[in-house]
Image 1: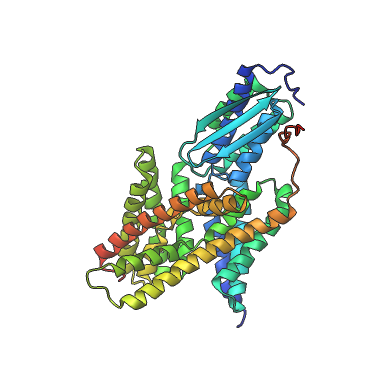
Image 2: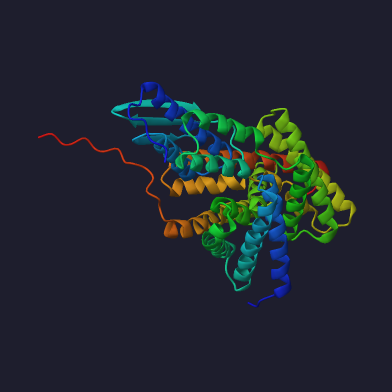
Length: 262
Length: 167
């Protein structure tokens, strides 16, 4: 085990606060629920020598109070865009366990985290596009889309995910992007399935935009509320609702363009 | 009320494919994608059986989430994937995104200059809203219950000692 410093100077208490919050920030940004963030920040800070840790988890920021050797310090840290990245999430948790086992200490932990962020692999973009296309086409089947429309839902959602990657790279506002993607994907899916003689054009248009449905935040919102963090849970829920509204505007515009739906 | 095996197999297969597809989006490693598929397939199989036995979408989704949560809780150590990952990937195919879109579309239709059958549209829209809310609630609660019941909390944090009361 790593030996806690016997005389923790204010500087090192600040280091404990900042390093442990970096773990929390990365976990939040990779899609972890608040209970996990709280658990790992506390574990890291305790392993680095903190006697007590109090963490506030907001939607866009973390605040921590660390106490060690009779003195304490409060610090805040901004959290960036919240996405879902399971391999980064796992790598950060592994890093935390290495601090607990004494393999990493204060001076090496921050560098190791930077390395983890830099080197955690991602699936190739084209692979993600195709997988998402397949997921939406499968969703379509679950919702009752017929076989003639299946291939077009797949193609439209694949193109939709391709556009999403391009828009994220250009840092387009996530809500505007949702409308753009859902409009393009629903129109492509609608035109294709109509030409193929599908009887479920309406459902095919909806299925092609399901790549935008924020499933992880909607489940995290509940986890957070059930774990005693209603403020963060509500913030996530509001974000989910707004994304759904913007997504639907895209489908609505698509339906008007094709004269489908109501 | 009868069990239709072909339908169950169909839903299981596409539930698994949807879970794997979303697993890729969530950057789950290739070797763990298979387990996402298993979780997604299990979720849809249980939900479909539940629906065929006459259950509502909400209760069937609850049973499915409960099953996924419990199975993941039992096997996660052996598989070596985090509970959260499998739970979420497995239950994503049950999140009723399509209903949510239809509910909001219904509200848009109500505000048209000349709404067609507004009372019917409103009822359908509200029904979709309620189904989305209850289904997501059922999934979240179903997933949370096994972990809340079974999780062995590691005593990791040292609580701040309260200052001694002075007379």
